[in-house]
Image (cartoon, rainbow, N blue to C red; front, top):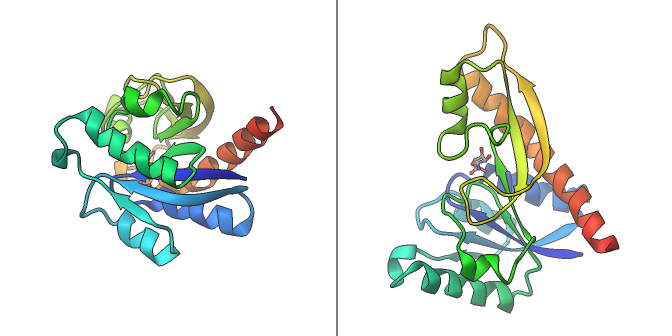
Length: 192
Ligand code: GRF
């Protein structure tokens, strides 16, 4: 089984759904660690409640990004982590993590990339008035939401939708889509 670390900066609802999918067997992987860069993030409480160790590591406690990521890398290696799953991790990943985990870091983004990368993707899409929005799971590279796309799910925006209803629908779908896509990906990687 794949040992994974989930990276999150905020609420952690995707961490929660991934954890539940590992418990039900829908996601055949073990979440060994949560990595969080925000000491006040709710995901820390969630990890505690699930009994998953959480490494809280604030970039401002380090002289530079390389030193920050080296501290994370040490923790990942100490926990024998094979694969990094970003779920609401609000930082760009640098070479210190990208090199040792080449093709082994994925992210979920709430838009049909390459449309609407970056912050507040749902708000950007809603303001642009697009009628089909969606979710992308992609490999992570040094860019902002730019790595190779693994899978996407389109979602229609209806007349009666508000920004809030669209947002709620996206999050609900993310919670089943991400575990499914990861499970498929891990199966393929295990066969190779
Ligand atoms: C999700 O919408 C995800 O697509 C984006 O950040 C959000 C994280 O939500 N990258 P949560 O912290 O998992 O609740």
